[in-house]
Image: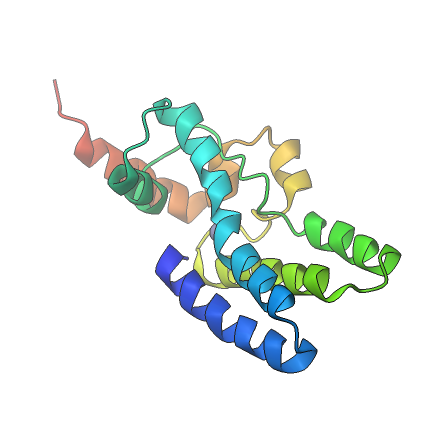
Length: 156
Ligand SMILES: [Zn+2]
């Protein structure tokens, strides 16, 4: 899902968190987690294209281009389980609860909107497939991106 949509949905969910918990810190943590989870894409971008980040290309690359590997370490359902255990250990502190809600919202939206393999957002699945983009994208999206990349590559 695109960043502006994450920001809008995160803002709405953060407002609900504020209404529920009456904690500005929890609402802010919710918003930050809902938006900034996508920062992990920058690592993948640098590994694919080098450390000279071109913001416009970064967004375009994740929408249509083909990566050799997809790591996106923060995009993983497993972190929600880890987060819930931590929440339980720290007695459900509102800021941490807001963080988990924002994170979960981000992942649910990505899962529903992005047309990747249904298992793509499991870190263990990506690890088992050595972070290959083919397994992350899924067959249909992989073919679509490969076709797109062929169009972009000038023929000899
Ligand atoms: Zn995301």
